[in-house]
Image 1 (cartoon, rainbow, N blue to C red):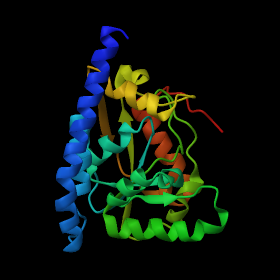
Image 2 (cartoon, rainbow, N blue to C red; image 1 turned 180 degrees about the vertical axis):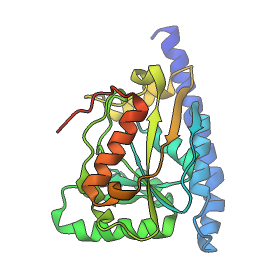
Image 3 (tube, one colour; image 1 turned 60 degrees about the horizontal axis):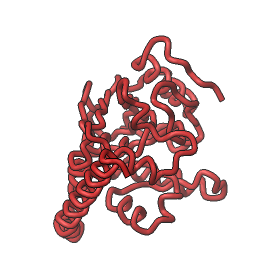
Length: 254
């Protein structure tokens, strides 16, 4: 093992130890808040913001989070997206049911009120739609990644309108706001794409000396004809993020 590799492993270990210590510090206050039925328990979000700091993730906020009940539609680059968006908005998330199969991840996600979606469970779509609608009404802000998987950060994959079934018709009082997660010119060092195993990406990112910088751009909320259906919502959100990335950003079609 090279000296650089040894230093990276030490850095990884220290960051994991710090995250574990912060988790243990947050468990008690979070449990107490749940027992007392504190609305929108703040401790899971505080935990994620703290983890972002411990992991060396520098989060910058551009624009303003819309007020009220909010659905955020963001591009998806990395597991870091979760930490960055939570730090910037205090939101809960819509996640795929694969996360629920790992006991520790399931518990951690549940603490942050994650809504699990089984994309291939056609029989359970109605229940999932109702679950997402209830989350939007109760949690204040929920983030969904319409690409359905991580991309390379330079282009956008197609936005899957089927994931927006809970928004047809749009529940009263819900604002839909696109968000661009911008990792800058160093995105390739962070993006989780291709055949790279998740743990390899995790170790690679946490072993870095430089912070993983990400800017969270809150773009203008959708309105008017853009909210007519799940398909118009998906299209308008994708176009908004693409325009923010670059007027000439390639839009990969299905």
